[in-house]
Length: 588
Image 1 (cartoon, rainbow, N blue to C red):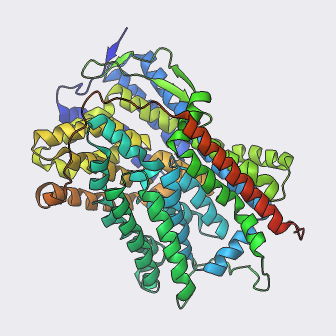
Image 2: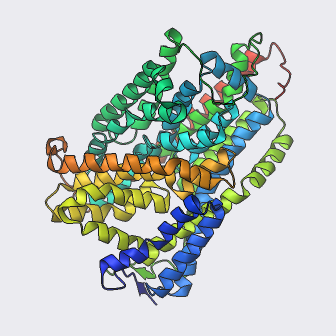
């Protein structure tokens, strides 16, 4: 028996929207005012959403519970799988003692916390977002910064805020690909429009990050680095998104920003070294000089991670992995049972793509790294068990958050809020980014938000005489701002930043910055819609029924062979460089 979604249960969209927003307002209240732990707030919000779905929206109890379970499973895989493997990779680097070498190396480049944040949270995080996404960049960069001695709250908060710049082009452009699929607007057109919006934020973001850390006066001391990081990133993001499409802007801009900063720091250093107030003096001994081989070995987990993540992001490799290593099934009792407002059945397919998952790429990097760092696999197994215990509450939080996202979407609660915003008429371009922001807050994913609201954005824009690429791109751009306060992202950052149980502090740290940036994006989009319409790219809608391309597995196997050769050569090179001398394990 089917059940059809309801958007306006009270027959008044304003009243219905007031009820629909209650679970979200509860999350804000619980984390900001009540200061609840993340898993508590998420579980209660999920129960609240279930009750509203059943009582007000008429959703059958069975469907409401099944929808929540489906979301929780998605939270466990692939989201939690990424977090577990990312934290495991970092933990074995610390346990082996090699992170001490990394700390010394970073200090040799710069021991200034402001510049380390630009290098790791902003530039390196953007690169990882371009290749992996789904929380991996925040997990890895936050753990790195905490390991370097950052205040945990600032490490996690800065990584969340820095992650706004690249999210739209994350995972080799998947968010924009999905937006194109649901709207029939070409990928390149959406990429170009986003690439004419987000660089305005990206060029300003390094300055904003350092001001948050150190205040305006101390920010002026590192203005050359801020300018170099922001301008290089924004220019490359704009150029690649407008000429190459959505797949590579983060990778190109992230690498360009890293290289530009390192080159600058070869010729320029700030007059003083800034560290956090009350931070202990650095314990790195200046009389220790590590060889190039030692440095490469210490960085090998992250070098391997980069190589493997790049390969995992290639479509031919994904096709091969999904062909031989993916289990897909229709979720029992839920698949095609719910009908959307148009009467179309909503599919619920669970994909267990255990080979192509980003978490598997991270795990492979860790497994190869273990012997390179002088560890035994038996010891690494113990570290993995400790990692699972460390992440118990974040796993519960993420499962609850995704359960919340699924019940809110399947019941029609999220569509009620979207419909209310769509009724704002000519002001809709101003509110369009808010819709993307809301979608990412709920789902934790810009990709999911585009799938959820992309079609509504396009149809509403057309009805008021605005080019739909403006509002569809606004959904993408607004979504990146919601990423920093999404309960899913907060849970990931808290787990990596050693802030488990303190999610409310992290949420309060980021929420005001999310609202500031959201208002800026809303004003930019409104101006693009009516004042600067010349920035809108020219394009033709994608014709319906375009032929699909059959995956070329031969190409995928060739790429895998190349990856295997590269990994073998890298491992052999590290061993050769270090074989002349056996290095003792470095005390932590």
